[in-house]
Length: 429
Image (cartoon, rainbow, N blue to C red; front, side):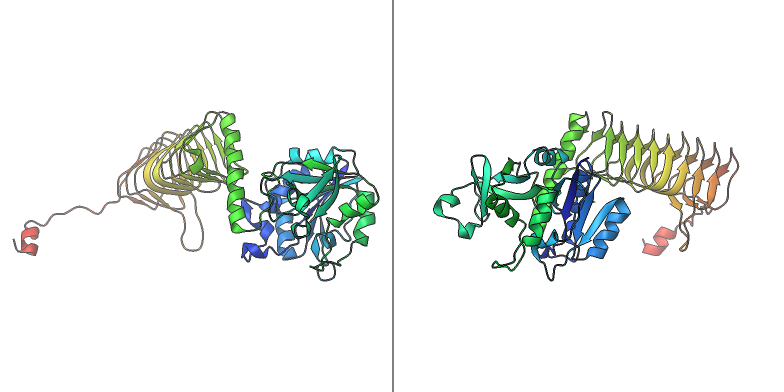
């Protein structure tokens, strides 16, 4: 790796109208900034993130998820703007790629096109059918001659459809020369990174335009932009899985986060949400089910089931309105209307409707262990900690508070009694 990467993430993002820093808003379950970091990591081992607004919060989250990231805090009071953000940044390689932290759709393939040139400066350019509102990139003889803000454009320049996408690859030596010489003598009194283009042109240094896909270099500045970007990212995720053999019913209704893995000819039905580091292997996830941070192998889930974090289900049937949390189920049937939390259940066991593992006493969580070939009748409460050995039957309506012995029938019903004639006496009929 012979390139450094700087990611600009210092802005307040006021148009997001949120207390959350703009770059920490999530796309497909992952902060926008993290998408940019992961694209950068495929190009470089020298990555610097420039911070200012809510820098401590952003830095803490980056350090919780990544190692080896460098940080630079912008002096935004004295040196505002994108050019000011680069002031004092040091990078160790001959080229420096400058990214924006609010570009979650950028890919390493797209960035490679900017870094593979021998030019001392390359800049990303987008062709827009309607460039209204954007500064124009003026290109002559395959070289950028200037960037002109729309309000400053001549009539001829207004007809130009090439606009700045905001990502640059610059010779580090040139960058170190230009950044200290930037001026804030403009209407906004800010230091603009785009001014380095004019400096290069004035010194007759060629600035190479690299035309890029608008979708990949889409910036996110509002909640509307956030929703549009996530829709694009979701389509990428699902198209890749379908290309690898996954069947999806009405994929536009399915939500899959970035770190999810799906293997084999799995089926994902409409309305499903797959969250966190979920892994689906040769399984059928039925309509409107949610699976989070869990592994599902050779199983069917739902419809309308919820598999919560740290669950491991193998060769198992989970029916409608069943919730599993931190459960290890191997060869189990739980057809409907049950809560199975903090439990291990062995093969051949059947869990009746309305079964609950009572895993919480108000202070602590406890585990329920159920062996193989256990039949749990409907409306059973298993008060943890409790262990049910292999080959046990639990009658419907039972509350289990003690460990039985293999071969037992466990029964704790109140004896039924009938009072003759009570109906007619009560209603007077």
